[in-house]
Length: 175
Image (tube, rainbow, N blue to C red; front, side):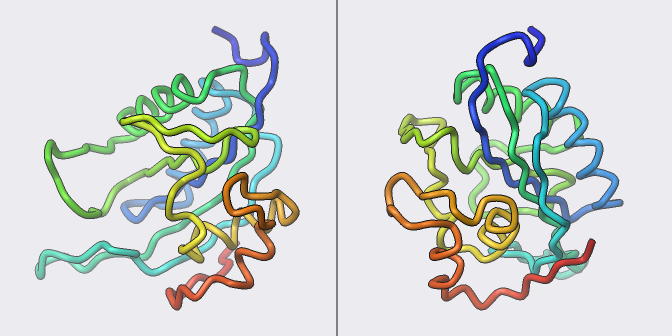
């Protein structure tokens, strides 16, 4: 299916990487999102952030993440977009261990944050992302591209949520 052939939905994604050439991996991922999910109509700068909830094994230090927010126009339903995002993660080398708890280092991570103003709750997908308002590394890039977007459950703009966020994780613009 060609994503440009159907009606359009606004999909906000956060992509991140903390392995390898992080900037190149994010660019390759953006290209695949454009091909498989829909045109990327807006993107934030790259933000470098400390790993949130990721701990090293004692032998390998955990590299900081590069994160970027994308606004994508997609004809896909939310669950279809999720399946394409998971397929892209797999193509980019992400391995999701069975039964793994917590967060791990990864070459690419794609999170669906918002889909139009929809609220989706299913075993495999929750939109809006349930912890996005608690994480500066999500809010700062999203606020850059859509400061006036209103969270459909919290009824606050991304700018308001960013201002109110108490996350102390280091997050700085790097490109």
